[in-house]
Length: 440
Figure: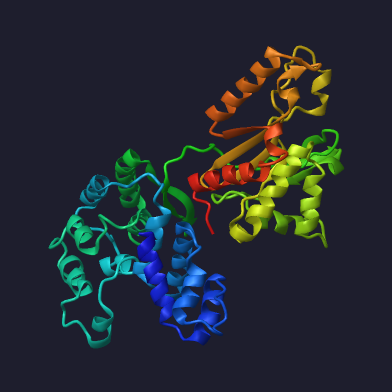
């Protein structure tokens, strides 16, 4: 597949003039092609493509496909990016088709639902006319004009839905249960039946918004995540614990009573896409007029407690800020998880809450919350002596977090300093982003 991508991209570039090759790739994908002086087209193309990884080629293909509306190129790129994802088998896809019977589109036309995702006619057909013989003509005839002629199972075979990328198949299902296609009980029953089948391969149609009061569903991996929605993030603690009260307990609106200067409080709604660095920067600019991303970064660094934490934080932004850009997840340091009021120490016969602060927290799409802990000796000892009690409390708190749906990852502080630290950190985040499909 990577060879196919190389050939497809090479063909696109070769079809350009030297002048176009100097401009269009950079405009579309940020791809700088060497100047033409002394080079043939083939040499210029080899120079820019040969050192790209399979994933680089795939992402490049998606960008060109979006501009050129090239479904085949988009499909080739998506299949490469899905190589390590759990498969959506032909068995499951066939069962999905049988659930839909002979009605994929509901109240819409089948063509309207399908044509954005699958090629239904050739360029020659589009130019000269197909005489009623194109796949678009056949779908119109057998599914829209004469419902019941074709089943959805037969349609899937004709358009290639049994073998297409998982993303393309999922997008087709999103359209099949879109409120314009199905609403009310019809939508609810269809989603429930489809999810019962999709779950076998680890996928689902999950509600992620509304339009005019009707649910919108997105195809995604079946990941439990954390139930509930984040409401207040108290983070970047750099001093005494602040005292917090409720300005409105009904709305869960909090107010800092004292110690406001020691932490930050993010109280904007956090949706299904998690919390992005760009969103955090936007919030920071509003609550701190004149401040920018650099000043926010400096403020967050003030809360870091060790060289190991500082190394992880700095490497994260050095490695991913430019490559992920607007989709870079925020890496929040020193986040309060359980919050004991300041008066708790005055209460008798009351146990303190465990692990009140996390070293780092990331809120990723699909309610996924990632906790990263940097373990110094205080995680395993008391008064500089090894302590089984301290260790037991730590692993017990980890268990509770995992059972609540959090992912917990631990680094030994020694891993994050010295030779190999940056490679170790980027290897971790590369794998984490791969699992959660965080891509530009």
